[in-house]
Image 1 (spheres, rainbow, N blue to C red):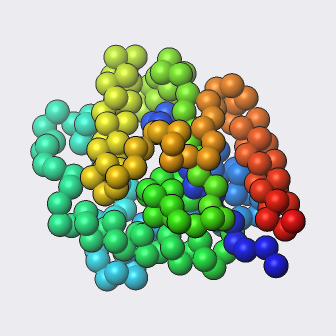
Image 2: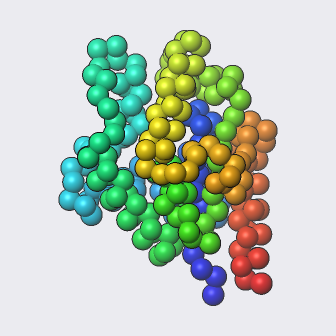
Length: 202
């Protein structure tokens, strides 16, 4: 019997990593977890969903609003959020085949031999075009937002772990999503997973 496989996807902001993860899960027939995992963590921990829900969007809105408060994103509450998410990630990876985008899942499952750790990146100019059209920004605003979000993700990752967020040393594969496009990247990752399952069976 083949054990459950988990694919974790870390990504640069604007690299279309979430879209790739969602399509990959559909192609493989795996469950897909992103922000829905946050809701599960909130429900199971008894914490308010407001602490968990739409984390990236809140950071983006805070960045775009010049009057927003600049309070720290770390601290006791975030420690509780991380622990709650960690417990959900470990449970779903044990119980089912799944794709998990973000949430430090690669670190949480670092000792899981059946976890495939992916990192999606793309050239800055490609990400700028993606973000400027998605959020209706100027080129300068898009560049600044990308820098801000990547910095936040990196800082959050380093706060809770001794891993490097975007380092090849802690990933199984790193892919430039611009090389093959979204569908091509999904096809490549699907083949990788199928080969890994075949290897496990043998």
